Image 1 (tube, rainbow, N blue to C red):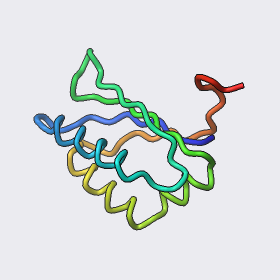
Image 2 (tube, rainbow, N blue to C red):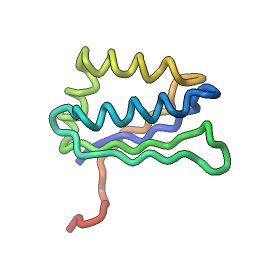
Image 3 (cartoon, rainbow, N blue to C red):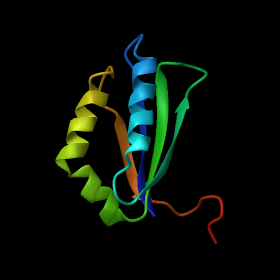
Length: 98
């Protein structure tokens, strides 16, 4: 499995919009998508941490490089104060992993 962790700060008042984009994405997932966890921080409710999981590195980058994902990212980015901080990598542990 492969994925990314991102830290991002939403523009003031855009919290509901960002959460709607996430729900829409989960309703029409790309090939190889497993799921994601999104945290809204207690210490700063405009800051989120997102962990996204794909079946493989190849599936992750096929999605990341697609025109459809680029269009989705642009809608997402419009709601943020600045670019997210992305950290890609191999997933080495998760519940149920043997």
